[in-house]
Image: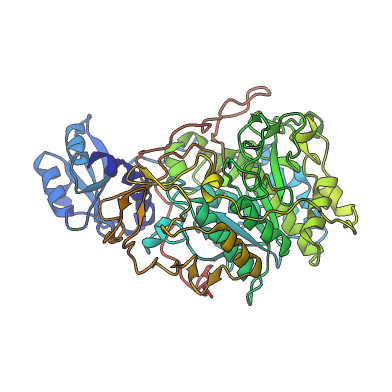
Length: 617
């Protein structure tokens, strides 16, 4: 049982974030001063086992410091020996360090940070659009990612609308829509962050007021990733399909789709099902902004595209990263080594680049990246990250500004306007495409009249497994492979492509023959389904756990979510060596609980600042 418990910790540890505000202090008699060698931990147990584990802790000289009854958990001070014993107990879901918040800077000043969002919005020219009256108002940006936490800057009235949660964590009502990983919230802030202290005119607000590229745009969040980032291509396709088919629902105006995601597909875009879904969105009037991927130099072969999937589809906006090198001068900007660099003669490079190095993003305390990469913590609110994920989010916000000014613009027109007005920074043609995002130039340029792309279209009739490339989600160590979706249903790519073209791949809460609605996927059970011979018959979600089994992205290699590094290190000359997530394994790392400064992450509701989209039809 040791291996399944270890895999489960990455998910279960993130659950603790949500219930920090639910602490119930234990009786005073249970608290004692720990020895110098004692450790402070958060323990989560299976339902019904909490009292027994607590008795064991106290009998061995440990002390219970707080109760977490909602999650069958508690915090304790105990010896390492007792902690090890607890970790070996099959009834313990997770045991994680209860660490104190230790931000890197006690007095972070965004005004002096060349990579703060105050600086980035000015540097990229977004502030010029704000002065002209365009702030993204009325434009919805769909974010298919790991969810969005209602942290300050994203908790304003009607700032975030929650679409369906298609992640495995949707089986727990306590986790639905929330960002246990930390990636989606970071992207949402870059796109449309809007602090309560941000007042119009936005360009004159103090740098301490956090702002995204399009502060008045609205985020429509579709969660597909879990606490360790795990998701399957079929979940992303289902999310894209939902966006397309609900973009113009009453009260909705989805004009931009951000995909800071990509796989290393091993088939051409012309048949790839993920590329096809993105292409359908594009042709339905949605500007699809896709991260180019953090692969660096790639040999360009027919089976190994240099760009991530779906960025390798030439219709969508494929985004690489620019590095300002710590200055406010465009002339010395470069392309970092991780940004896509196709081999000479390749038919497809990025369409443009945008700032994506060391950006100031909104932090989700106790999320996966927050606890596994404490070096990225700027202070209690902010986190620093680099990657084509960040660059894609910057461009998505820029597209929202353009679409407020030109509400009838086609995706092709938006793409040409943004890429044609870019600044030609240092780099080879296919590294930089149209150059670095320069919205000030785009503001004064006319909207292209005859912008029409004429690439060979995708049929979507290829292989779902080939679209995964090397990225596979796993259950109990067994990866999901072959032509079957996350529900275990056969995936008929040609038939799905027909339904997507007709706008009928979703019917009520049904996608590919299975219910994905609310907290119920096929009645909360996976009866009769199997992955590679591992039967799930009779297994079902019980509370917040998967009947003792675990879900994790066992072969997650950092390719899919294109947030390459998370680090708060400062500039050193013109180089940056904190590319810490390149090809590394993220498995089995327990999550600690950090103070949330009064933030309560509860389940979503239809009232308050964030809105749940209840309709699945």
